[in-house]
Amino acid sequence: MDPNMLKRNELLAQKVIKGLKSRNMTGYYAATKEEALAQALEIIPEGSSVTMGGCMSAIEIGLVDAIAKGPYDFLDRHAYDDPREALLEGYGADVFLASANAMSEDGEIVNIDGNANRVSYIAQGPRKVVFIVGMNKICDDLDGAMKRARSVAAPTNAQRFDLSTPCSKTGACANCKSIDTICCQFLITRFSRHADRIHVILVNDNLGF
Image (cartoon, rainbow, N blue to C red):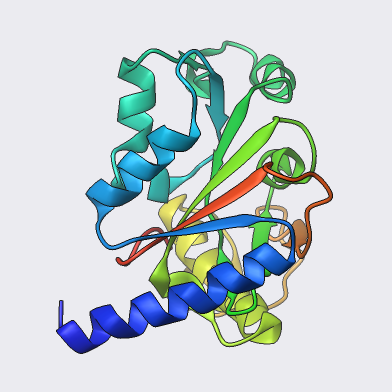
């Protein structure tokens, strides 16, 4: 990576971390995926029950593999015969692994969901939420973050899941009401009432969508 871009990301991350602190959330900066993995495992105590949604960023830094193979109780939703049973058990987990569809420089976190499992876990449920967020997700402000979530993350995920939505075909948000839409719920996490619940690891890399 260009040294100037590395410095730029580090300085921007410090601004985001300051914004998170003002919102009663904790931020960290990792210069590499390896540093991000080490930081995440430092936050998650051994023996913790851990669940997740469709968090590609956590997979990309090796966190999901480390949790599945390590001294943790990994509540793998794919191992359940009944998806609802997996969902309900996950609410009682110690840790939820998440990412963001977008974030503002001031520390507001934006997520869009189709089935509401991710956004409901983030809003309430597991005792701790650990976000893995690539610096590619950081936007100037909340409006920019909302635009990124709808115009970049949602179409990309719709295409990834081969859904029959307008954005899957055109790559652009049509504000649709398709039965396949994944834009059913929007969550803006702007403050945490509970100290030490939300942790955000900003990674100097392009992660997720």
